[in-house]
Image (cartoon, rainbow, N blue to C red; front, side, top):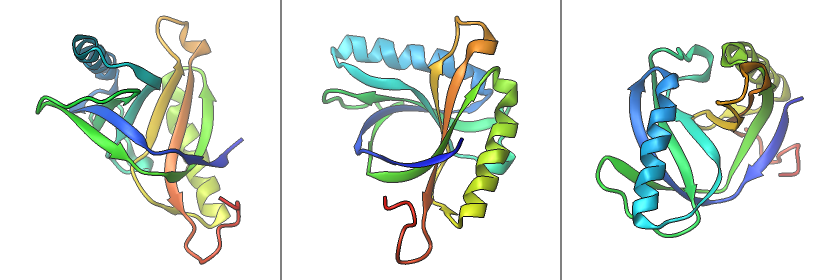
Length: 158
C-alpha cells in the first residue's frame, strides 16, 4: 500500500551512467570498492536514482545513478560525485518479486499520487532491500518518488 514519508538529509556517493539498470550491480561494486579504499562507512541500502520520467522508464536504456549513503566524510574522484540530499517528501511503495513487475508498481504508485492530489517533485529512486543473490521471487524493492503538495497545507501532516 502506498504511503507518504519524509526522508532525512544526507550525503550520497553517486556513479552516474546510461544503459541497462542491470548494470547497477557493477556500479555498486565500484562505489563500495572506492569507499573501502577511502575507509568510509556506508548506511542504508543500495539505491538507484533514475533521471528518466517515472511513467516512461526503459529499464534497458535508462539514465541513472547508483548511489550509497555515506556514514562519514568523503570526496568524489570526478567520476563519482558526492551529492547532498535535502529533506524530502516521497510517495513510496514496496514491490515484492522480480524487477519485471516494477513497471506495474510504478503505474500503481503514480496513479495513487495523482488521485491524492500530489505533484511529482524529483527523480524516482529504487532501494533494493532484498536482491541478488536471492531468488527473484523474493526480491523486495522500495520505490520512492519525490512529491509536493500543491496547496498551502499538506494533507499527510508531513
